Amino acid sequence: MSGTVEYIPVTLNAIRADTIVGCDLYLQNHINNEVSYVLYCSGTNVVKSDKIEDLQKNHIKRLFVRKADQKIYLKYVESSLKHIINDDRVDIKEKAYIVYDVAKNIMSDVFEDPRSGEQVARSKSWVSNTIDFIIRSKGSFSGMMSIISYDYYTYTHSVNVSVLGLLFAKYSGFDGDEMQVFGTGLLLHDVGKTQIDPAIINKKERLNDEEFARIKMHVDLGADILKQTGGVDSTSFFPIMQHHEKYNGKGYPNGLKGDAIHKYGKISGIIDVYDALTTQRSYSDARKPFAALKIMNEEMKGSFDDKYFKDFILFLGSGGEKQYQKSKKIFPISV
Image (cartoon, rainbow, N blue to C red; front, side, top):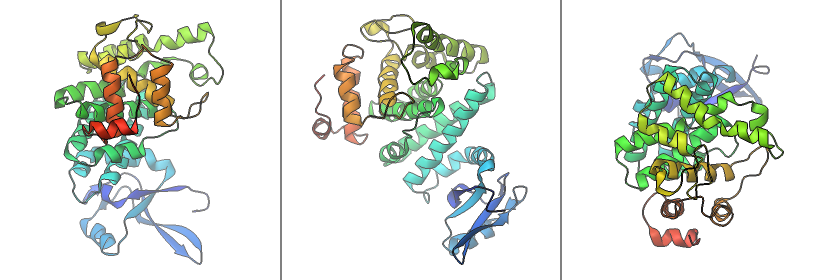
C-alpha cells in the first residue's frame, strides 16, 4: 500500500488534543531500509490528549497524511489557526509554514469557486489571523519571507502579495483595521483571472493585442464577482481595482494618475510587480530581489509613487523594522 500511496508530513503541533482531524493520521516506520506507514488515528476518531503526549515523550514531531487528503487536513488546520498562532510552543518558522499553507489552500478553493461567500469569509478570517501572527511575533518577517513560494500559480501569487503587503503595512504603521481591509483586498486582487482562459495567463510567448485586452479585463471582472458575492469592505476594492494603475497614468483599467490612485492601490501595484518579477513564471525566470528592484526603478520609472517605492526598498532591507541605514546598504538604489 505504501508503495502506491503518497504521504506527506504534517507537524504534530498543528494537531489539537481531543479533536477530530477528518483524515487518517499515520506514523512512519523504517525497517531494514524500507519505509512504511502505519495507521495512527482514523480520521473519524478523536485524537486523545494522552496519545499526543506519548508522541511528544518519544520525541516524535510529525505525523503523515495521504497526499490525497491534504485539503481535508489543511481545512482542519485552518479551523485551529488562531490556536496555533497563539501557542508559544510552536516556533515562528513552523507557524509561518502553517499560515502560508492554509492560505494557499483557501485561495485554491477561491479560484475554484470565486462566487462563494464562504470563501470570502475564509479569506477575511485568514487575514485577521495572519495580522495577529505578524503583530504578536517578533520574527514574523523573517519567518514569512523565508517560505514565500517562488513557483508561480495565480493563487500563490495572491498569497505572496498579501503576505508582503501585510508585512509592509505593519512596517508602515497601519492600524489593525487598515491591515484587515488592505490584506483582504490583496488576497482577492486577482480573482478576476478565474474568468480568463488559462492558456492566455500561462502563455510563454508575448501576448497579442487581443489577448492583452482580455487579460486587462480581469480587474473589472474580479470587482464584479466580489460585489455580487458581498462581504468585502468597500476599501478593500482599492487593491483589487487599482493594482495595475500606474503613477504616470499609463496603467489600467482607468488610467488613473498620481494621487488619484489610493495609497492601497499604489502599494499593491508595487508589490504585485515585485512578486511577479521575483517568481518563476511560464515566460520568465525569477529575478533576485535587487535585480527586480533595479528593473522597477530603471525600466518602469514613473510607474510607481517614489515615496512608497523607496519605503518598500527600505522595508525589504530592514527585516521588517525601520533601520534605514542598514536598508540603504543592502539596496543602494536611488529613487
